Image (tube, rainbow, N blue to C red; front, side, top):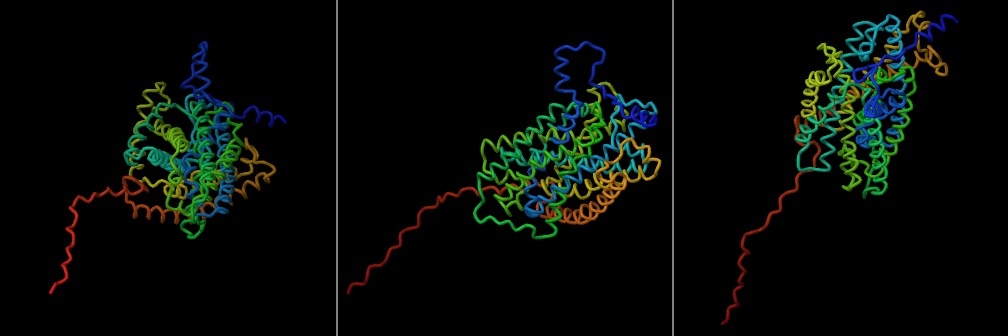
Length: 488
């Protein structure tokens, strides 16, 4: 009993990331309002962050995936990868709590330091795991930010096509660079809430607008027709529910991180209420037309409701860019020794070089839709599925580690044996289906996009310009004179 009591006492006590806090000072009305909108660390804040971050621009590409998979497979893969993603998010959260508890027993202070996934791997399993985790995580978040930037340009084009998508990418790259001024995930409270409101509106707009539009004449639902398209669609859904690469940073922003356990599952359940109806409705209405229209907005008629959805998604993609980029900012700050700097302006200036390669890659590969599947198969598969499952297996491989574990697997899933079995299944399934077949299919499709449109394409999947009207200014031909018949 004494050992059990000690374990309870030693369980994670939250350490604040206090760069924006003013401790020991009287709270004015202004500071209270600022704290209400700016400083979030509750379980509700974490839920909003997870749900808002999980479904962003991918909401617009899921109908495209349904056209590749077919209706039944599309629904089943969403349910399956939603559960799989929730499980590996739970593994990441339990490993974070294990790492943090061990460090706080050693009197390590995290008040001005944000714990990240590669540091968890380093503390629990050593530098080789750290290096692999750091490489995959940073590359995934880099391309995750690229995808948000591509999506901004793709969406705004449907409101204003006076500029091509590449030019819009330049503009939104500059706008998204302002995220360097957001210190940490503590400060996304109001943004996370608004982001979820925006995606909720967009999802139900897609659903209702599709049903009101009705099925196009001669609509066909022939998917799946090719293995390449089938596994491309599947890996886009793998990517959809792989948004927990920032789980550790979101947990660290919580006042009580141990409450995170089931938050990602609850967030996923809500996200499914958005993705399933919207993707199904758009695919029902437009069928195989979606194979050549990776952005669902491109098929719906222009209206004030569609314009509102586009604007809201643009704002949300700015928020999601910040979610994906903030961990990269932290890594860069730590690399150059600026992470514990108190000056927000100095840290913002130090972060700017991170945005430049993101901007550049978005201009090289503007393939909205296909790039999601490629990132899903090659990066998401390892970053948030395979590595967390293997890390959990190796962290608790010894009897002593399992006996002293801060977080034990749920009994209803079979305890340690059950978690080991699920982890092995996750590793094998994602490696074979996600990385293997999915990698082959998504790379094949990606190369096809490069062959069709080329790198640095100016306006990906834009409709061809209307031919100019030609006015005939030539004079009318002279009338034909028929000779009179010969008279004798």
